[in-house]
Amino acid sequence: MRKKASAEIDSVSKDDMEVLRKLGEKYAEIASKPQHQKKAEMWTLLNNLNDIKPMIWVNEIPWHEMEKNDELKIKSEDSLLQQIETELRRKIYKWEHFDSDMVIEGKIRSPLAIDDSGFGIEEDVDIVRTDPQSDIVSREFHTQIDGEDDLEKIKYPEIVHDEIQSERNYRILKEIFEDILPVVKEGVPGLWFAPWDQLVRWRGPEKALKDLVKNPDLMHKAMDRLVNAHLHRLEQLEDLGLLARNDRNVRIGSGGYGYTSELPDGNTSNLNASDLWGCSAAQIFSEVSPKMHEEFSLKYEKRWLEKFGLTYYGCCEPLDEKVNILRPISNLRKISMSPWVDLKTGAEEIGEDFVFSLKPNPQILAKKKWKPEIARKRIRKSLEKTEGCNVEIIMKDISTLRYEPERLWEWTEIAQEEALKFAEERGLKT
Image (cartoon, rainbow, N blue to C red; front, side, top):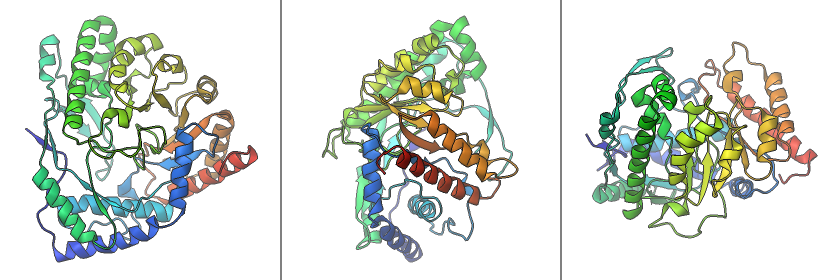
């Protein structure tokens, strides 16, 4: 079965038009503020490895817990317009309550209508929910790859661009936001690449890790086939001109924005991967040795990463003691430092050579009682341990705020205060 990567739209109701135009006017007003240009310049300096204030960004938010005064309530009816409305409402909400170092660009992006046939295997999983409104669930995966014969189940994705529908989407959005915001067609602004995240869903986490010792040939062949499938998809996106720039306010890997002056400038059509940021991660390898990480993961991930101009590595897996195996990635620029690393070790290993993508533990936001003084202390201590590094602070994986969104508002304010204080004390650009 083919999967639609974007919704379709042929017409828009008067009510939907009114909802989107009103939001667009508010969004345009926010985007016109000069601090966005300054923030973009700061992110550029960080990603170019200049000494600046630690930059802060918040992502992976439990939006079902954030509502206060119907600020996030979706009112449009069409599925594509609901996507646009959701994005606008969430960005406006973040700006008004916890803007951190977010950047709002004054344009509406019209997604291209892209069909992706996928990899041929659907997850066979049992899901347990503790909060019916949350996207955070527990999963038990059922094995779909039992041996080498099952590797044939991994298919090479086929990409099709419905140009007629893309033009319809663009025409409708341009009509809605006419005289408010420019509308630009946009393809795929980079790709999340974590093949081991896929394999463990198809093989099962315990079996996959045991296979590193008991059945290594199966894992090597599985990774080889899956990476080839990803590369096949990437080549099609390049050939069809469906890639979009991500050196802007686009999340790179599991980190912050991709602003930089070190990627080819000016080209906005017929992009190649070399014009973009790439990323990779192997989260299941948290307890795997550097040697096995390199053999079973990096060996294959490098084939993907070398296609891009700059790259980001990691997510939740601790990498403080694996920086040495990452250094041979010639275009590597940012490394994830998850809540489970030793910050001092990570800082010593990274130094000024890469962006230190610091991930505070979101657990502090989920405790029974919110203690902002402890949050402040932890942020200050983290900054002290990473002194001398180029740091971004990424608060992510927020499973719950106990339906008290003010916790995240206050955490963001505290993080900004401490980052500014830290920068001023050390003479960093603010």
